[in-house]
Length: 90
Image (cartoon, rainbow, N blue to C red):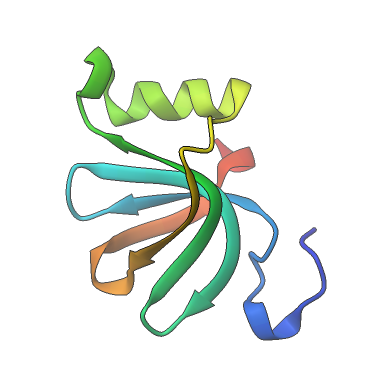
């Protein structure tokens, strides 16, 4: 269960996976869902094939060990988002 900030969305405080229409996938703690996108805190970005790992392989590792927060905060634009799900659901 996330924290109780009704104005920030039901995923506030939850670590999520944001898959895009492109080759990127993001993992981070959801701060807020806005009309222009989703703000993630302590997040990481992976591009399919980067480091020899597919997005699927990256997400399996992220679900098991977490991610290194390479970005303190980032905004994933709404137009790029294909899906959002909880990392714990993997």
